[in-house]
Length: 88
Image (spheres, rainbow, N blue to C red):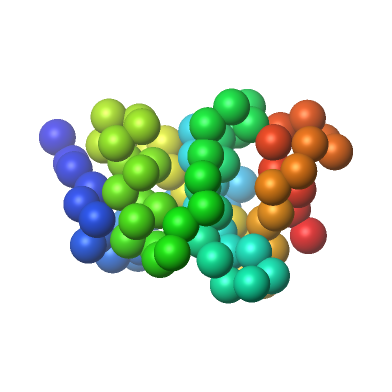
């Protein structure tokens, strides 16, 4: 069983719009955001390792449940689309 650690590289993670449970990305301030697809669980993190650690713990360390937002996409917390996050 593959396990992600807080020091895991981002390369093995998906970088597309796959139906992963968690999306990891950055906001306009450069902070790391984790949001689940239903907008129920997530957080704001100081670095990518902390964001990965949180997401991995929440999905029982299943890398298929974690993806990065597309390059150049900014994430923000909000409720305008019902998902708990807004993508720009």
